[in-house]
Amino acid sequence: MWITSSLKAAKAPTNIALGNFDGVHLGHQEVMAQILCNRPKSTSENVNCQSVAAFHNDMLTAGYSDLPSEFLSKKDSIKAERHPPTEPERPFSDAYATVVTFSPHPHEYFSGVSRPLLTPVAEKAWQLECLGIDQLVMLPFNQALAQMSPQDFVEKVLIEGLKAQRISVGSDFHFGKGRSGNAQKLMEIAAKHGVPVVQVPLKHERGDRISSSRIREALQSGQIESATELLGRPYLLTGKVVQGRQLGRTIGFPTANLQVPDNKFLPRTGVYSVQVFGADNPAQITPKTQTNAKTSQPLPGVMNIGKRPTVEGKHLTIEVHVLNWSGNLYQKNLTIVLRDFIRPEQKFDSLDQLKAQIEKDAQQAIATLSRL
Image (spheres, rainbow, N blue to C red):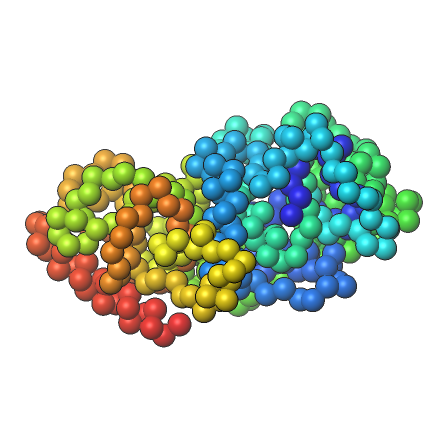
């Protein structure tokens, strides 16, 4: 997938899904489906060894842990701005399926407060590519863009800059100076240029609309099953294994200390049953070994998010114990799939009590994961 923050480097013509799309949840996928109408329907349950291996390979190439907040791509979009794509422009009947979003999030820009993301840029790009999106255009949200009128945004950015042939938005979408533009206004402006706009109704689940806020609330309360339903896939944590205090080894439960992006939204503190991708080094999967990758399975594990009160921890950590497995995980990229919330974090009177509880947690995780 081509990723850029520059209109000059963007590939055109385009069919555009327009929005912030944090989470790439089922509601967002409905908006994107409108620009993928002539393609085979993609499944949102795309967490498998092959797709994770590709994701990890991109991270290794791009230096995931040290990313700037604006964008990530295996094709460096900074270089792309200096060296635009040289491939022939597509005919209008074969436009690039393009997601157009903003960085930083407009709420973050106006409030000055950083906004934890369900899908930081690297993860968002991966999810979009799995769905079949060709291009991600991340418009820098700055004063110039914030002050742009709805008409100028549609005409100068979408029509002139990206050569839009079709635009899809959620029915609640607002844009332009003072949020004065809405989906209906977008439709009226684009119609003058012969560009159709699809307004996608809000998608509901269990009587309420699917939204990024609702997913955050589910994760904050440990309702992993609910978050999975709303996303259309499990919630993930991806990062690099870094050096920890190695206390887990002393009680027979060595853990991998996972460093995730600073702006990644973390669920409720506590213990989870999880599946672990990357411990068997899927990033080394090559085209010659893809057959084995298809049959490979993620490893079962338990994960703790918290400050480890039993050992007087002071900083929030993410620690993963891979069940019935041994090996060196330092500096490897892991993707952790959250499957179930086991219990809140708690303080124990001794390491022996902690060990006994972890053994119970492991048994519960095995029982949960065996039902998948």
